Structures are given as structure tokens and as C-alpha cells.
Image (cartoon, rainbow, N blue to C red):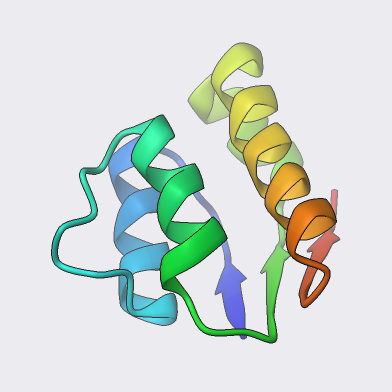
Length: 88
């Protein structure tokens, strides 16, 4: 399980996912690499819980927040063993 709280930067987002989901050392810390790593490198099943998303959206900006959410949703839909729980 991965719990995200008070995410205010992309670096913090990457840091938390890397720490909690044990992303591989070759994870490139970019959006394409994030999708690739979550899709193939992390053993499932796992759950991502993102709390305080309204604060995250404000801090990250609406576009980046929407992109991150889209990546997480795509991974959850494609894998079938990933659960995404978003709390506003």
C-alpha cells in the first residue's frame, strides 16, 4: 500500500512512490518512466491512497495534477491488481 499525503511538488510525489512502492533504481523520475515503472516494475497487488488531493491540485497546478491522476488511473485500469483511492 502507498499512502500519499500533502503532496506539494512533483519531486515529493516521485520520492513517496519510490520509497513506498520500491520503484527500481532505473526509474527515470519523469512521467513516462512513472507509467512504465508502475505498469511493469512494481509487484502487485497494491493500493495507492491519495489524500488531500485538493491541496495537491492547488500546489502542483491543475494540469500536472490531472496528468498524474490520469497516469495512476490508467495503471489501475490496465493492470487489474492495482487499486486507486482518491480523497479530496
